[in-house]
Length: 214
Ligand code: IMP
Image (cartoon, rainbow, N blue to C red; front, side, top):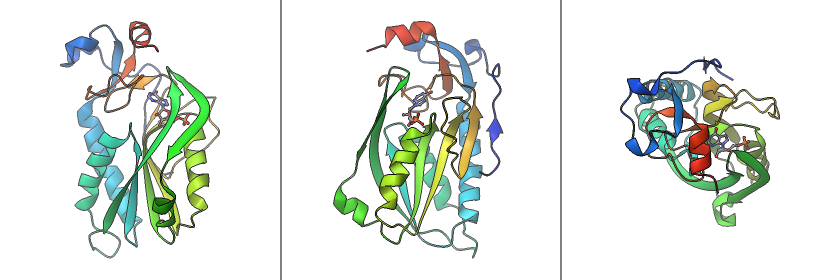
């Protein structure tokens, strides 16, 4: 893994310092990563990825959580140059994966991608773009599935990596931020489909967990 920003257990900012959607007033505990910092860090992730590129890249967005990260990362990657000072040919793919209910991994990983799409990965350099790695179970399952279709390489970039004892020790090639073992929302990360409309990454409050539990 390349270097990343390590966020400590008590890091973060009081909610009063930010303009936040009023409908989440009681549902957040603190802002963990402000939107501006997320965007700055993505610029560097794109530079690091580009520096390692030699071939066209098939960038795979893991839906739904990674769509905001994916859009911003691709915007930055398009402006980057590879090792030969050439721009990087990019194509996009979208993979829908679901494994969580409330704040718990269900243990079952559902991956929706057609056989035809996966066959087209043969011989390609895949860049999987994920929002967060928690236990690592989703990513290991996804990589195992994709490997069967013989891509030339698989690299993973995750905006967040949770520091949790539940981890299966999987670590992606590129990570934006290592975060404490807390349930976070915002910047498209959801809790039962809520909070995707929050720009900053924040820690959900007990009130928020109860208000949006299924
Ligand atoms: P893993 O299989 O435990 O690594 O979980 C990965 C997936 O769980 C991510 O793609 C997210 O959809 C979801 N997830 C894990 N932790 C969080 C969190 O703190 N906030 C929102 N979603 C999370």
